[in-house]
Image (tube, rainbow, N blue to C red; front, top):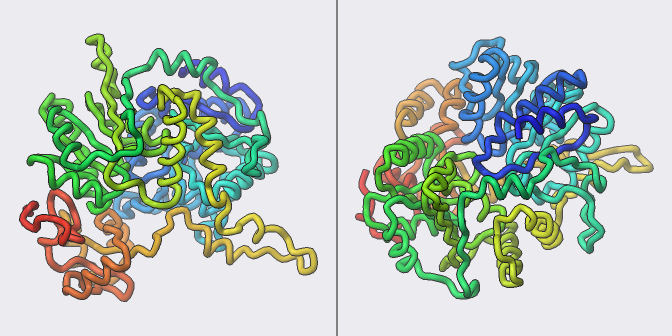
Length: 507
């Protein structure tokens, strides 16, 4: 695969795809393509775009070991000013380095921004190689303007793009009823010569699908099935389901969800890896946050019915290192129908699309050949691939020659808070940072560090916490949790506890 990446780098600039099974080592191979392509075609830099900040740190470490610490600059919301020199901070803000590692949010929102501070790096995107890791996670509601922006960057600003994933989405135009305005047909060139053979050679799991995809299993039943395994990961589609299932599991059982702050999740993920490496028994119940870039290798993984891409990504946490293959075995992935369906919106549509294809006779839900038809149908089902009307707003008015740049900037937000509010939590260093925020005010250094100690809650949950005196304002815009007992060392922020046994968790 590495050899194929280096060979493909000689091809003319444009759009490329790298379709590799999860755990197939695409990180360094894709970087090798980017560097070789830049060298052969006189590109100025490689920009590596990652969907989640939680993945950035491990990738940056890999890149710095390979290239040297001075060659790689990371630019994302978790960057700590204390850990950077002024020169490094300026390089990050201007993307002035050979290799830039940033987030999907930072990259694409900068293309549609009206803010000078975020636009000052745009000139350094020109004549670069942009690698999009986990490309299937590009937000569907902004897909058309994102693809149009990429086409313009390729056609007029000498940018090459590489789409990396095990579940390659369908970005090219197809003659279907959706009217999807994608990239020109045939414009995306696959680097791997024989994708099917690669997937066959790296086959590590068998996926079992229930015979009846319309009847749900109860949490009690699922809990019992999980307890039959010493090492098992169960992935569900929402944090309420995660909490409900976790309460039914015998302790100790590890919980992972967005009700835990980023630092808490990182600490727990490292502990899980340590237990797996030592061969200790461990059971984990998690939301889909583990499905991209978290290098777990469980022998058994359960996944609540979801989109085919989510099932495939969950499968990538099973027998990831291929050790069971050495024993002549495969990992076991079990798909089940949960008591609560996936949340409304694109997650529900993805789940329904997968169910329809499985009921239609699909045998292997993680066969790479299924993802073209799957994404084609999913995009067709989406209400809009330009939900905010970005393309129309940026089409010049014939009379006034005007374009609504500021309106687009205000509406183009990849991470939609959905009416959520942020709470600072006193986990670990978060407690002292909140104290410093109260003492010194909203200094940038403190706020940067506090980004690792926040949890987002819905507005009604925020109001409940406020009414019962659990949170207090520490700045006009920021609220912090007062009562430490409401942030649990196992499950994170305890909200909606009326649904659960209040004695089920301990600090």
